[in-house]
Length: 478
Image (cartoon, rainbow, N blue to C red; front, side, top):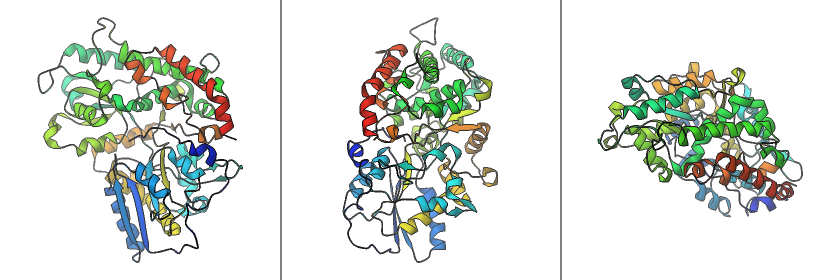
């Protein structure tokens, strides 16, 4: 589901221009009665938006809504935005390129929409707390406008096969030490897989999507320092924040990463040849790793909350569904965790967007459709049909949920008092490829899994990269 964080060079120059024309369209545009929506279907499907389409058209019988649901929307959106004949009216998608599009004038301003009401609440106040700082985008001339609303607020982490746990009498770990002990227990049991060729391993994972590890590691990070310290870090005040010898908050991220490394590289102290994961996982894509988890080759998996839908979509002929039931555990507590931060968690969705192309002939209609999506009814529709959660306040106690897994996740979400994401409204973040790792290319998991770097070496690389590039990043932010 997550896209790679790639910000084109166009962004750096585009941000120096206060406003640009609407992508080549000339003359006064007249609204029409057709609303064309492009939505990313990967992870959440399209049943939810088709339901919302029905309720919207019931209120607007003279409007025709056309849904173009695609597994991958990135290339289509980019080509359409840069076309002088773009007919799209609304985008619901994933990818940090939205920052470049906003800076270049491709997205319509949504300032007035934020002040409108949905269910008696202003849109800006309906946005979930973890995304409240992501509503406005500051341009190079100091102007702040809204160009994008968030889409989902997803709790990822460590998923597990509930039936396998029950059948083997394994307790869901509540601490990191219990998690390590469980891995040793699973390895020692040598439970044969369904094909009889190997033994069940503690973890399946996708080496092609190692950003999925962030969802747990960032939550471990927050257990040590809390949300406020991370929010301060995300202001990106200087390159020194990436130096663990100068910044205690970043030192805590290194501590969290060391525990992850212990789990995957150093957990079995008695026998170094024993691993906690399925052999060859470094090269596997998400579908392959997910099917291995589903088919009982592993007891647990690091992933995001779209995993449930993707598992449901796999052919029953490929599954052992009678032996599988998905669960999501509360992130086990690290030894360094502080009691007051144990109910803090990282949520996904920082790189997602709901946006209107500035070339749209139906901007007002598109805004009305957005309000339909984020309404209480829209939130319920999304959860009931996508098995996930929009990034808006919604009382799920009033939502009819039949699915036991979704009910359990709602209870888990309610258990988390503080949620945070890695979005920053710092100009240095908005104008560069900068992120928590200084660059997504410096995310260390795969290198650690390949044992081409140590945790100490990885964080030295991160600090040096930030120092070497900071002056350029500051220049781009002007």
